[in-house]
Image 1 (tube, rainbow, N blue to C red):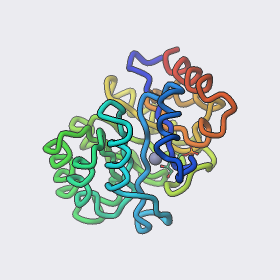
Image 2 (cartoon, rainbow, N blue to C red):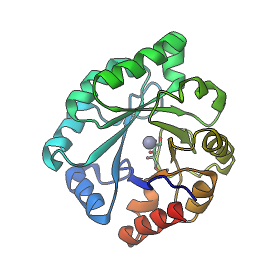
Image 3 (spheres, helix red, strand yellow):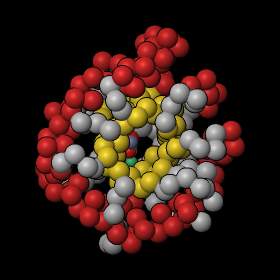
Image 4 (tube, helix red, strand yellow):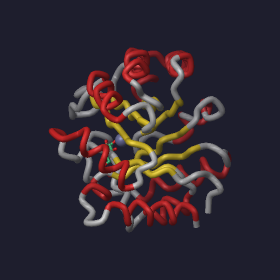
Length: 226
Ligand code: DX5
Ligand code: ZN
């Protein structure tokens, strides 16, 4: 479907967090393209995960090569740009809702500028109830748009197929942009995501709980390549 590179990103949110380094190594061995790291501040979403110190430890353990796709579900994204870059994040995806509530359009632009100055790829995400129009003004400046397919906060929720309308609309207008979907994506609904135009796929429980994660990752990649 897409000429864009398929990128499969296991989310480690539902991994054994006491063994995180090993869990990440396993995901890379299974064929993960990127590691999706979900940062939650207990304020923007009703859950708490981790911050730069853990990202830095993972970077030390895994070395310079793995791509850390950091998804920030936090109320003050700008504050975390520099610390995340120093910790070793490769990509910084923040929520439009958080940025806009803090300081409107100026805040969104400031965050994008800071991400670039700090050498990371820039992504903007929207929650399911947020209209796509809100992020269209920034699409020329970002590397990736993340369309949430669940309410952010927890792994293991049900995929919202009606979000595919946003993906289709984006893909129609931005042929070369990385479009990521996140939330409830499994091998059973990957075709729906790929047909709509997503080429970057986050899957947490869909990969971690699979009997054969290597086969699942490969199947997901093939679906996007179709
Ligand atoms: C939800 C997170 C997701 C989540 C995905 O807020 O952003 O990355 O961990 O997990 P699954 O695939 O289980 O929905
Ligand atoms: Zn995520």
